[in-house]
Length: 260
Image (cartoon, rainbow, N blue to C red; front, top):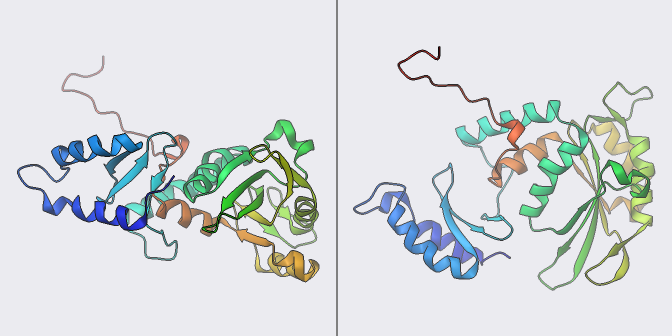
């Protein structure tokens, strides 16, 4: 559930820290009065690190943001968060990439019924690690499958350890688009409309071209790529909290007395 963008923009303007009167820039009194009203609709207002006021749905923890653009210049705080997330992508597993980064990101972007297969159900994946759906303004529903790879996707004959070959992704993409999924909300089996290929590393231009040339025109229009840079920028501008393992270690601060 998302409030109208105009309403979110109005709240942000009215709660600007520069308009504080008889209170600090955090505006605790104004925030308390606003949240008393918003709580009736299941929302709460809060200030993020960028000092803008956002709304959060208390049931799903989804934050309302104003059409984030991953192509805009990042602030100094966002650059630091991007660096911390990049370090996390270097060390996390494929399942952690899916559960700690992709699922919160797509949920924040407005996708619903996001279902991850997990390693226990690998035999039942049929080429997709995650499936989800998106409701258009016309109330039509599109279904998406996601194939996740932790490392780089390339088109070389001999693939380095940690990387994936695009030929393997090609087979999984065809399987993903051809196999039905069961949507329990409508009690029907449906086909995936589009497939996201997501990589924690780079998706090389050669790999994209190879897949585009191999797929026919119909299938080609159904494939979309999200590589490392896209993932980092999207995650940061949507103002999602970093995974716990991605947070920088806190420095212990001792009192005047030594700890012994």
